[in-house]
Amino acid sequence: MQPTADNAPRGPVDASVVPRFAGIATFARLPRLDEVGRADVAIVGVPFDSGVSYRPGARFGPAHVREASRLLRPYNPAQDVFPFGAQQVADAGDIAVNPFDIAEAVRQVEAGARELQASAGRILAIGGDHTIALPLLRAVHAQHGPVAVLHFDAHLDTWDTYFGAPTTHGTPFRRASEEGLIDLTASMHVGIRGPLYAKSDLEDDERLGFSIITSEYLEEHGVASAIDRLRARIGDAPLYISIDIDVLDPAHAPGTGTPEAGGLTSRELLRMLRALADRNIVGADLVEVAPAYDHAQLTAVAASHVAYELLSAMAPRSTPVVE
Ligand SMILES: N=C(N)NCCCC(=O)O
Ligand SMILES: [Zn+2]
Ligand SMILES: [Zn+2]
Image 1 (cartoon, rainbow, N blue to C red):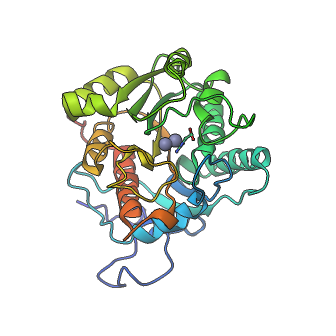
Image 2 (image 1 turned 45 degrees about the vertical axis):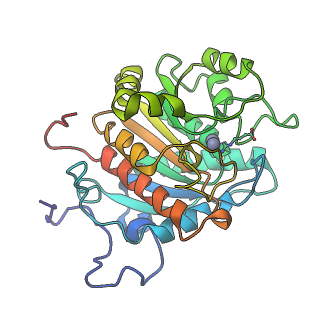
């Protein structure tokens, strides 16, 4: 049953009373954080894309994902949970960051996340390009110490520099590893595919603490096998989940800056996320949605459902989750 007590979490606007296409878009038509005071999970937009190496436009991602999230409903049968009833989820708006100065923007994202941590148990950030994972991990590390990073992406994002710049959307996990933010024994990329710069990219990546489930592995061995591997790797470490929407095939998510053929279906990604409901998820980001390249909200619909599945996995269970 959906909780109905007076102190129950405040959920989305009732779509049978106010049509879902009416009103200003918060994520899933949830209340704003300033309306509820504090939240178990705060959704926050990070409209920053000055770290991209190819197509720009992910700065418009947060608004696009919110707009496409109007159709989400309160009960998630796939996880048998009311993600907005079992916990208070609220939309904290956007962190305003400097689009002309990456170093300052990164400081602003970390400061914004730390401030939010005072009134929210966990943060789900919506980007923005993948640069933002670095300051978000800094904020999470300040609370939890080194975390297992489960990173869904076509790209390793453990490269060193671009044009000499150390802080870009292709480098956040190398910086995070160098800074000791991640658990080197429990971190993993899922969905990696496509051309690299050199064979040594993979050696560097392993040294930096990641193991890899490639897109090819998923095709060859299936989602169930991938789930076994990623659960074994993560163990019971505090878990940070970073999802670059380009992990999906461009057929499922065309609206992104560095698309790579041969990717996952949204069905595969959603299923893997469902397998994380019994883990200690301490934070998450969902990045690289670039609406200028989207069509019919394909990418944003996929992204909003990915966020919904993450929120469902974060929701506390009254009974133990069975695999
Ligand atoms: N994080 C994303 N989406 N892309 C990184 C690609 C870096 C490159 O241009 O090689
Ligand atoms: Zn990527
Ligand atoms: Zn990425």
